[in-house]
Length: 632
Image (cartoon, rainbow, N blue to C red; front, side, top):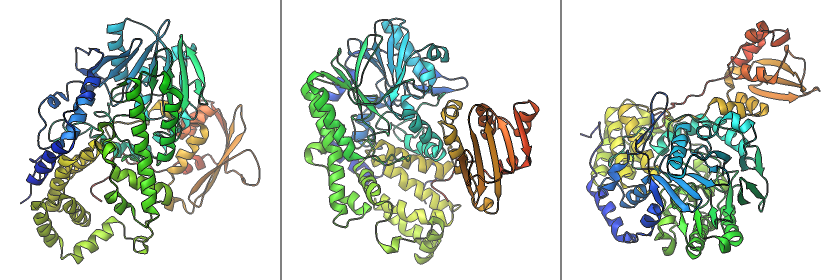
């Protein structure tokens, strides 16, 4: 009989594989440990960072990592997690400080003439406020004179309201970001935001218990905080490499790096400190070309180019390089070696994947064939704790050729549930599949067990034996994973098979994000929610006369919601015309107000069939933040 409650001990083959790692990697190299503790000034006395109704971060949660590595964790991942779990205030160089271990990312504080520049204020307002309080406890109560977002991912801006107020920004406090930041920050968290957030629950393992049989980290950092996410739009944009800005006496020279780790990203050189901030373009792990939570595929060729450019532009005037994750690297020669090895890492994956693509290999075959050169294989900062060689090579394939591997047999496969029923029938029924799978489990072939038992679960999701065996297999795969996000995916899958969905611990569809949407993005977000089949026969046209700007017409026809600005043949005759302010239209589209309320308050005027507005909105679906992943 299989287990069905977990977590279980590591199986012998996993224990042996984890033990073998110790002989393959240079665990006697302690440089990272020295760098991660260098400049430590202190940490918070209270380990709990609280929100209004819950603890959003626990600094003590990873204390178990101080013990020796157990056999349920890959020793390489244990080492990385121990380093990433170090928390407190650290001096990078005089005048430049980092708060690390207070969230998935780091917050950097650069001292100016009157106050401080805050770089990348974490995910949540609560963790960012705690980080700033820690800095002030050691360096004095200096005001925030500017905020800088290095790129468009939420762990680098979501906590901004914990360090600045609306009044400060309205009074002229600079909020600096790369060109395109707002568009990408908002669109990523709105268009496919529900699906990304659900998958992020798997990726970061936020619902897993922390410990040697649970979540030990995510490679790039430990996990995501669960506090209040906000967004203050930037008011100072960086538009070109070489652009120089001086804020509160702090000189900054920028390098734009679009299309690398984020669609809008930049590096920052602080010449007076001989310090280079690398945002998330060079961290102490192999990064993602396609993150497991989902995103647009990143371009490793461009990524490598910008790392070369960073060396060319800044190496001769840099004595320390730091990023918004992990710990700094000191010394010019070490910085150059770090950046060029990171560059070689992304170049190698790009070039070798394409070489094999052009020899006819498929994504699965390429992922099995590519191995890094020995020098990169043994460099700790190129290990696959967050990205991996396996899923990054598949991302290169997807970027150039898409999902189809060219084999016509794969062109029109059955969807998972229909295929699963046929597979299980062909294999002799569920009992026979499970009998053979248990034998494979005993032989340590957990990868095959997970692949084949998945069919039984999708053919019959209430089959308790199948769910239990699948959970056991995923758990063992997690125990052996060097990649933190792989481990979290496996263990969260096992958790949901045993105990049901965990939902989405961190949500980013906040009022700040909705306010930052352009009106066009808001219409696009509405169009994404149209239930196409239910709307096939609908033909609804609503004209919005916006006070202070021109008219916009929405038409739902053929299951498509189309917007047209101004007048012309594409508009047609509206069923209803509504005159109102843009702010009131936003309230209507987001559900904060109804058309009837706006008319009753005198905030809108309408002619035509007012009921058509409610009919139009009634064709919009609600996304499901807890959709099934390991079951149909």
